[in-house]
Structures are given as C-alpha cells and as structure tokens.
Length: 212
Image 1 (cartoon, rainbow, N blue to C red):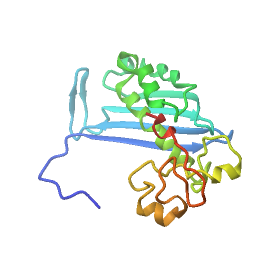
Image 2 (image 1 turned 45 degrees about the vertical axis):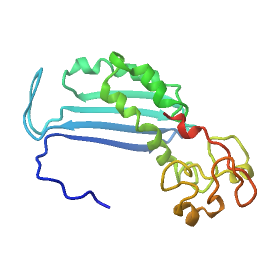
Image 3 (image 1 turned 180 degrees about the vertical axis):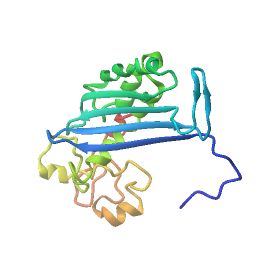
Image 4 (image 1 turned 30 degrees about the horizontal axis):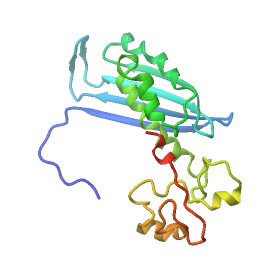
C-alpha cells in the first residue's frame, strides 16, 4: 500500500541511492552503488555556493565479487563532494574491503576498517547496501531460488534437504507464514532445527546475521 497523503510541506533535500549489478565476461560480478544528495535551490557550502541543479554529493562505490561473494577488487569515486579533492583523498582506503566476504560479518568489518576519519561517511554508508543487493542480483542467475543454501559445500541432493536461502530472513518469508505455506509448502511451519515434511532437518543458519 502507498503512504498516506502527507501534510502540506516543501521539498528541502533529496537523497538517492542506486545500486546496479553487472555480470562480467570474466565470470566475476560488479556491484556498483551511487549516493546522490541534492538541494532544490542554490545552497551555501563552506567552500562556496553550490548552484541548484548540481549535486552536493555524487559518490560511487564499485566492488567486484566472485560467486562466493568474496570481494576481489574495489574502486571508489567522489565525483561531487562539499570539499572537492579533500573528500576524494579517502577513496583509496576502500580497497581495504578486498578479501572480505559480503556474508561473513561484512558490515561489521567494513565499519571497523572505515569508521571515523579513515573514510567518507557516505561512501561507508553505501557498504551497508551491498550484501542484500548482491544476493538479489545472484537470485535466479547464479542461484536458483528454490534450491537450498548456496553457501554450504554439499552435493545436489544435500542442497535439496535444506530450505531455500531466502526463507526465514524476513517477515513475509517466515516459516509459519502464508507465503511459505503457498509457495514452499515443504518447509511450512518448521523453524530452524525442526524436521521438514520430508523428515529432513532445517539447519540453523548463522549466515542470516553474518552480514551485519
């Protein structure tokens, strides 16, 4: 349902975050995120007036990942920033993300590496959207959404004995909810650790929280 009609108001600021995923010819994937801040008027910065129509921020973060969601390359760019080249000086620090895995405590580790004056506040914010964006990108292309946990090394038969990766990760796809009952009846009503209708067990899945 849409939001209710708002009270009378005026637009004062717009922030947009856009994320796109690209499958590369070499088998790797690029996840590219952009944050843009704009004002609907001329805006006084410490460094001068930013005319209406030009962004306050336009910041880019591109990570390259393999099919295990491990980061193999990173590039950051500050195309528009309040302090110009001074803001861009922190771009290179985002290469510290290389070697991290998006589903193994990624947000926590990224924040440890980049917090405070080490990086750019808003580029670091973009790190938070990367794990779920990559998962969504892989669904249907790298992973079949009906298959079991793609992060566990097991044969095809064992994979089918685990619930699809997305179950139990949000309100709509809770194991006792109507969506699971209709679309994934095998796993309906069975929380982690309990047997499914086929007698197999829904394994505990710590990676649910591991991106945090």
